Length: 177
Image (cartoon, rainbow, N blue to C red):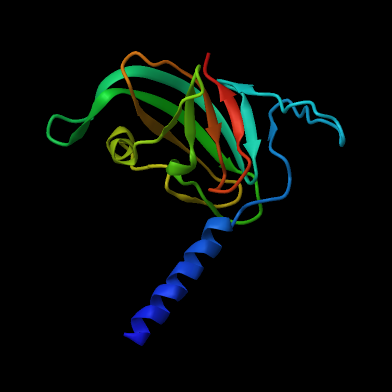
């Protein structure tokens, strides 16, 4: 019993340390390099589809966004949307000096009214045919391209993404419209 408790505490501590890996104290910035000078309240510039945007050790470039998809995968293996799938194709480059793991569940999407949506990791497995499922460790200088999948209500339109290099990073915004 005592070994199990010790092991559980050790595992929890390692997971907590791993979740914080890759976070920085630097503010998130976008492709334009327009960051506010110290003391100013100017918000960071929001990137657009096709523009590079940085958060921590990652540079994100949203390539495309396609909503209204009812199913991903094949007839034999796939996932059906509760509402509609929005497929966001994104390229992620590690601009740091250490390996960093991109976790799809750290990425968020928002509707115009501020409603937050999380990724559908199961659907992403089927949407990423070449197995680059965005839960990869990316070495410095390397990049991956994959699809983030959001299952949202049929009448909702996504307006922005918030992309993160880790669970606790500040994130960077990308406008979808």
